[in-house]
Image (cartoon, rainbow, N blue to C red; front, top):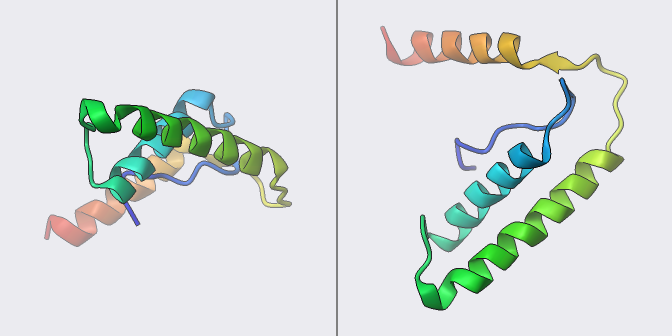
Length: 89
């Protein structure tokens, strides 16, 4: 899994379309192997990003949970702590 793709479900405040699109872009980059596609592949690349964004939005809207929402600041702090323990020994 691409490390840049973050979990988007069950956060407060809720995920934005921009965040969903950014994750979709990272996914298409990973699958295609292109950071920036050539002119010949640009239309297919951008179409894939838009389609994945739409499907991801639909998925996130349909998911349900009884768990309390996670807060981004708290999750980011936990992530930094895990990073420090793992790499800054």
